[in-house]
Image (cartoon, rainbow, N blue to C red; front, side, top):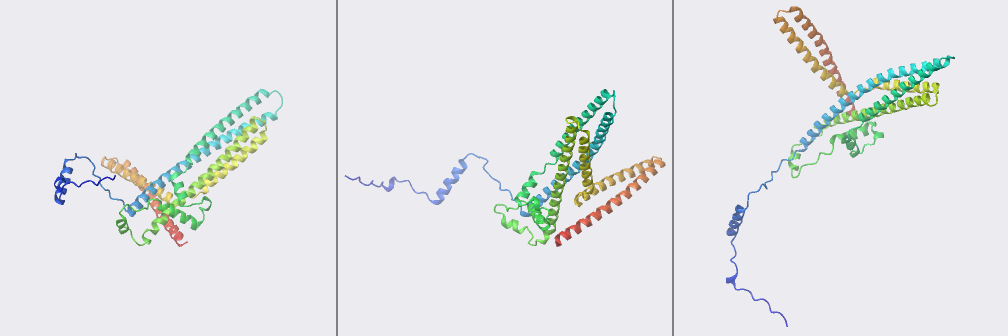
Length: 353
């Protein structure tokens, strides 16, 4: 009917229970018999919050320097392109005027008029091609830094409100802090111990970071405005070509060229009135100071070498040149001091606001 329970085996047939000491010894023997493998993991020290903050500041400073150099190169390229376009405009307008004068003359000059018209159309087509190439280059250079855009998005920045004083400063400080402020795994005590509890120790640094980020945003907005005007100017030039080639309407072509010249004059005025950030001006002056110091040292070495060689006129000339550069060096140092004072005033006024 039912199954009987299994009979327990006698105690003499059971394996002897190991004592704790014997079990530890057995485990040690097993460990020693295992093949050696590189399973050791070294725990690296997590960077403290202060070290993370310092590393992010250095990275942001390097990015700002690269952006400033890129903006300078872009502005110089834009000035050069505007100069080339000005010369091309003069040539194109002269060609259209020649066509107008030739069309007003009657009689047997039809071959000459036709030749000049073809010449003017060829120059206009060449100008259009160069403008399109320049616009493509400007658009490629005007592409912003995606990391900065991502930081602004994460900070909740609205591009339309970036010029509001308090809102802009708040957003800039959020961007300056970034996303690398998390504490390391298991290093909370160490990180908190290495951070000053006084926020005033970092107030000026964060405010300067915010001002630098605002400079970057203003520069990008200014460059976008310049690019828009460049596109509008190119559109007027294209309409001028259409009027000249397809509709044979020289008056409308001249009007479109005049509109393009007005926009070009507006671009030049904006470039002249645009105020370079104080940080960029200070960096440029410091680079000039380093270059002047190198030139002065070289001139003095040449002067001493010429004097030892018995060439007193050359030594005197080199020494005079060094003195002249020293005057420029003093002016550059004074300008840097003035810019630094303006930057401090800007910092104080922004902090008080």
